Amino acid sequence: MTAKENITATSVDTDILEVAIIGAGFSGLGMGIRLKMSGMTDFRIFDKGHDVGGTWRDNTYPGCGCDVKSALYSYSFEPWAEWSNAYAKQGEIHQYIRHCAEKYEMYPHLQFNTTVAAAQYDQESGVWEIKTAAGESIKARNVVAAPGPFADAQVPAFKGIDSFKGKIVHTARWDHNIDLAGKRVGLIGTGATGVQVGPAIVDTVKHLTVFQRTANWIMPRLDRDITEEEKARYRKSPSSMKLARLGQYWFNELTAPFLILKYDVFKSQPEKLCRSYLKHKVKDEALREQLTPTFKFGCKRVLVSSDWYPTMQRDDVSLVCDGIDRITEKGIVTADGVEHELDVIILATGYEVRKVGAPMPIVGRNKLELNEVWKDGAEAYQGIATADFPNLYFLVGPFTGPGHTSVIAYSEAQIDYVRQAITFRRERGLKSISVKPEVERAFVKTMDERSEHTVWKSGCDSWYLSPNGRNNTLYPGFNAEYRMRIARFNPSNYELVDSADNAVRASIADQLSTSVAALKSL
Image 1 (cartoon, rainbow, N blue to C red):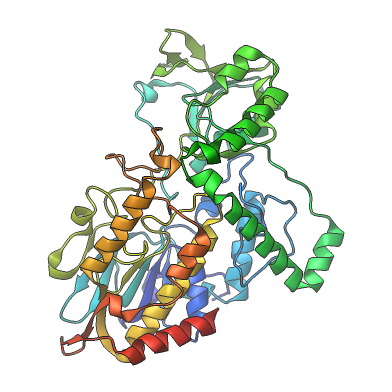
Image 2 (image 1 turned 180 degrees about the vertical axis):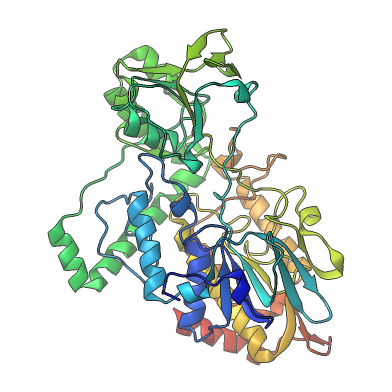
């Protein structure tokens, strides 16, 4: 078996894994790497795809890239000198993830083309049983769920969508066989994906019709090529790359209040800058008005683009702001009754970001179903652990999405916290550890109270909010503060059960030992 060949279903034995990791994106792969770096090798990473990468493996639409600087969109322990741009493109990000998988010898631990269909906890043994869509059963003492928030494409239920005679493609499942040359193309959506794909295809298509539901705040994308001389210097001095990463991290932290808090004192200046940028780039007053947001800066995701406004002013581009009524054989009919004839429709309509319910059927202690527990909104202590679901951990779970910085800054901190928890359970010979309900409730209350001060609760309709208007997606604060919150796994916040089903009290020595372990890992 070569380095890149994954474990197949036929080679799986009946032994109990120490750790089962679901998802091979940045978080899941990072969890595996950190476990291996700490000396633990009895783990396996399951992914429904054919390779590592998650979002960056699956999203290959034209113009796909990251809106976080390359220096920060990488593991802190593995800086990379090969970025070609200040903002990395999809191909290089995927290449980086594969580089990490190869360097840290993750491929022997990976099982691809495996969809995890369900997981159930057995109280008697303290073991999780994972079922795959193919009917395979895997047992593990610990489960780490890292499926990622952007795993499933969101396809709106447009009336008549099946009647269209042309081609329909979602950006998250791009069909590279589609020929856009000389075609009349409709682009539905002007969010983070739409502002990337539109400029990337406009020189190819005959005419681009952009269907906009909501105008977004846009900041210029200060991108640049990274020279070969810079790359050579970074290769020679990894410390300089880490320094650049640290500088970008703290710059993002300084911007947090302007992006997160809802008060005008923090919003007036960035809104003024964005309006000035729009006025400078778009001379037509009517078009400028259509492209001006009506909600507070940061209430929805702030976009980063330097080519969206120039694209929207081209003669071969039309902006349509009337709502979509239906899709016909020939194209799209908007609310004003106009039919826009098209050859191709591109759905840049985002992802099914799960804010309620579990990512898969998960049954915990006393046959409790996570779908039922999370029916009104996902909740987890520190975004990681949920009461009555022992030895189960989430990466980038509820309340811990990034509002102003790289998601990796959150997932790396969580990875180390989970590693501490798994190590503690193993070293103490415990059957299970489960967060105390009152501890989880206190954390959730804090998140809800702090969210009331954020711009996400200022009135706009965004994917950050659950159907009941609650923010259980993004972290309402600084990343540095969150990292300090979870730097040390504290066993006193958990119910500890030994192999004889006896409750165990966390001792002072336990708490001190985890503190020392946390400090050593910094």
